[in-house]
Image 1 (tube, rainbow, N blue to C red):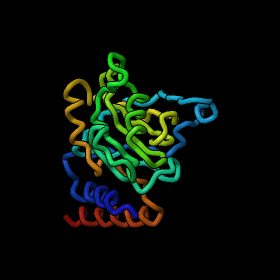
Image 2: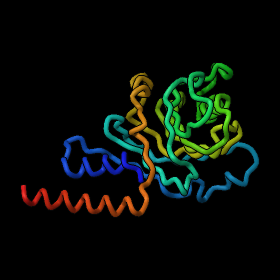
Image 3: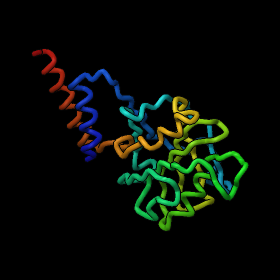
Image 4: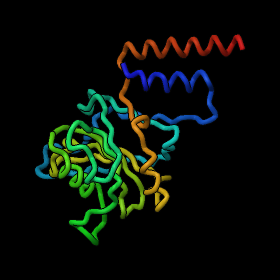
Length: 203
């Protein structure tokens, strides 16, 4: 049971906060309709939606069975300071690649910096700043430790652009990422929603 996720949802429902948190859920095959996984070499699949993500309130929610990732373990730093293992969610504060100076910094560059740091294989997610598009993007990697792994761009955050977007990277926290709750957790959440409705009627 993901207690952090449940607490966040129930608090938002019961308190009716003016800060309406948005939840961006990813629960379908990221490579559906693509030949990326059967094509030799790294494939970067785009076609991602444009979203507005409020770091102070919003959450990305992933289905661990679809992505093969869990429990989520978070790190936010420049590439050289990242833990070498045990992490599957990265906010990469390295905005360029010295090995490819003068070229656009894209998803592949970011993935390579992470792969060079990590020592253990495993799928995961990362957020990086695309210098060509001048905004932040959320990416799924089939293996964060492999510099040939296939990548799927899950979302671009159009409000996190320019220097202000880069500066905002330090604000990302573990609370911005969660897993889809188990069926038993959903039942508990439903009970919480009902309780909130009762309380509102009595108020």
